[in-house]
Length: 110
Image (tube, rainbow, N blue to C red; front, side, top):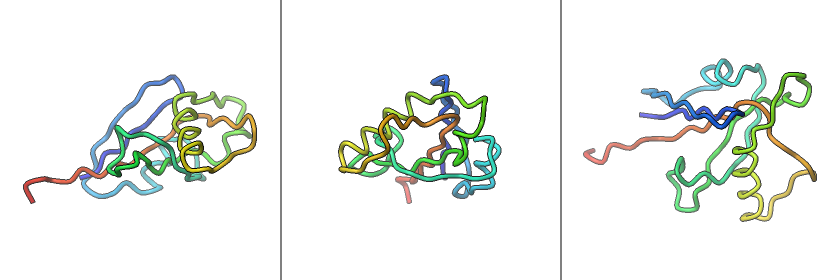
């Protein structure tokens, strides 16, 4: 089973269950876009990794949309990943809009 965490720019988070790993098609409608960009972020509570890193998915064209709002929570997690790994973004870079995180839920009984 997989969980799709949908992190909105107002700080709210929705979580949806999927039997199969969510696809870009599943995320397009959640993010409200037709082109997804991937990066990484430090979200230990959504991560199955010891280092707390996750793949994040967001609108690749968010800067070209007038209604795009900054997603401060996702930006903080993204910047933490950068600081921990030595990666860099352009100064002043801020993620906008909805950000998705896929988390695999493993059945311990298996």
